[in-house]
Figure 1: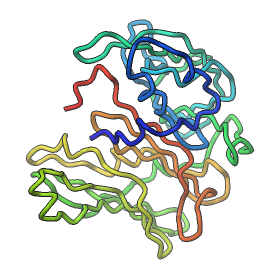
Figure 2 (figure 1 turned 90 degrees about the horizontal axis):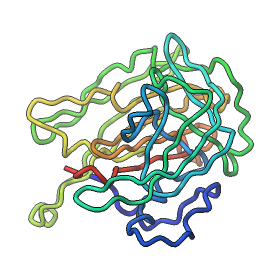
Figure 3 (figure 1 turned 60 degrees about the vertical axis):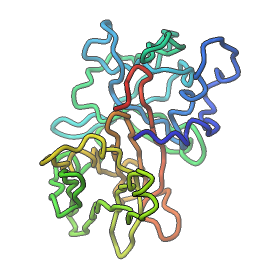
Figure 4 (figure 1 turned 120 degrees about the vertical axis):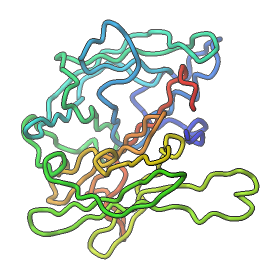
Length: 285
């Protein structure tokens, strides 16, 4: 389910100056904190607009983004590559479920790029990633391409989240291990569902890197493969160590970039940027 804590957080997007604009349509503030971290990361497609076609574009609630250059697309077909982009933002009201429309934005990128194969679009904008030197062209990648071998995971409500194992060419292994919060009697009596999260293991270290929101989607016999949540593994910051893009949303979209160069002591990676969004015209269940 959607983590509403972010609805009260102060947006880290210094590139957006729309939050102070008064408006008589409610609930905008909750949608001006979709992005967090030093890297803005967005999925290739979100929302519906007939003019979008198969291009990279997003129709989002809120007023968080503005026109500008410095954007990149990570596209993986036969190999992965970085493509420079510019963003054009126009105001476009967004429908709300069983309510009046609210302010929204249509995000379109140039040059116009097909969404096919695009893992994410992103922009480094805040220290220390404002110093990250990205170059157009090939980027070292292991996923997609190299297999993330399915491993034993956890079960809940008849569904199964599988773990994964990624072995790099040099033999180093990275394990993706689904974890479940130990249920308490009080929580069970209150009808509070236990949390499920993803743990990354490598080099004798263990690190929690994301909360799953797939529990509401599970049905009897359903299986979540590691390929569904490990969207990309490669070396974006060019330090010779793997970076990851992880997707742990269900009805909501939650996409997070982790960079090895941002890892704190005892960590494998550090959170570079995250996009967490549930469209207001979704019922949420």
